[in-house]
Length: 344
Image (cartoon, rainbow, N blue to C red; front, top):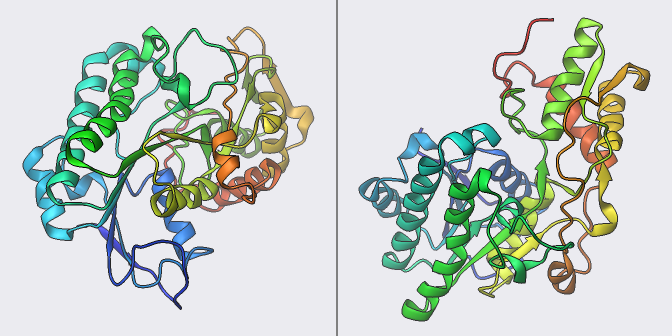
């Protein structure tokens, strides 16, 4: 397929300057966050998206590491706004083994997207960073001003420096060419259309898949570690809405952390309990494998910058978010990204 084009429907209304058939191009648009954006513009944000053309790209539409392929996409769609989600990503061991590829591939994609946005006179570019690129040695809570205060963890330095340089080049393009570029920094994301492959998934989709299989096969629900570490989780639909808001209303070059508040940190044990409840598995079937490493106890991020601008925003409670995502996963198991499940 050559880009999934969605035309906003219904009514007029405010919400920004992207109007009259303006094209919004979303790279990496078929992943977890892209699907969250799509859910928002087809749901609560439908009125504000009236008349816009939203193009959600996948890797099938062209290799963004290639300058000619990237420019061909921009020539075809002529976007006025771009949300850049595409990235070369992987788990801990992939990051450690392929540091050069994680650096080069992300640098190439980011460079091509930024140059194309400059050359095609795009009105606004929003790129996506990650809290995992912050300094390894830091104080908590982390905030946007601390991004460059020290080296990232050695394990993912290729990926981390490529992502950090988005913030640097945003400023360079503004200073030299007057470009309107910015970046968002989400915390841990979960929701429908996530990667549920047990070999490479993050914590919530991994727990959901494990719990689904435990219920199916009548086995224990094994949870790695003690369950004590604390994390902040944001539902992909909330993140989708906030990224669209960033595109329309946040015209500051400084990146912005998109996250629930510090008070909404939850333990991995609590997440596992909610997953068991959502899958209809008795909690007594949970087994915490305390011989497995817990990882960092907490990685708290401050959302004060967001809250100063959007004090009204209501995040999906994690209880409801996990229940809904469990339901989606169970109903869509065969078509979800599950990899090769282990034998019982």
